[in-house]
Amino acid sequence: MKKIILALAALSTLALANESTINNVTVNATMKLMEQGLNDVQVGFIYHDKDKLNRGIQTLQGANSIFSNVDVSVFIPNNAKIQVTKNINANLAKDLDALKKSVADKKYAEATEDYSKVLNSCISCHTIIRGW
Image 1 (cartoon, rainbow, N blue to C red):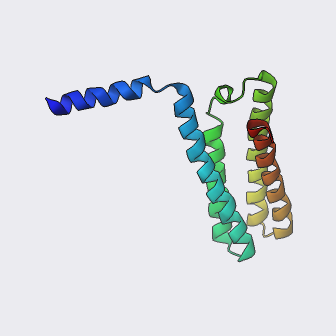
Image 2: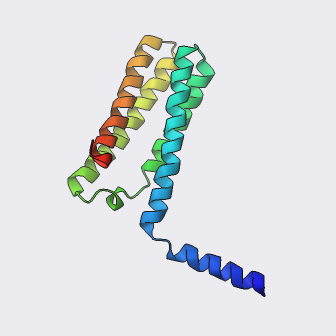
């Protein structure tokens, strides 16, 4: 009986969690993935480790796809800024595809330029979300 009561209490707590809390957890966890992906790409470049580069790109692509499902209106009250973040998300996906192709083609100089575009997308989004 106690287990049932505890389970119901836990379920009711989860039911009370609002979308903002859920999105905040999602965003924080996804940002950790983005950070890991960026680190892996950088280490891959520094140590000429193609596997590390590809793992980083995959991590970034996965994290970016998560962001495409986050309701950013919880964090951004301005509708124009919401559209801009959606555009950044789409641009980031294209930049990551270009980065992946450059690495696959062993065009590492181009890959660093593609990576610069990836970082630019990150900074652009942070400028909007965090008001930099």
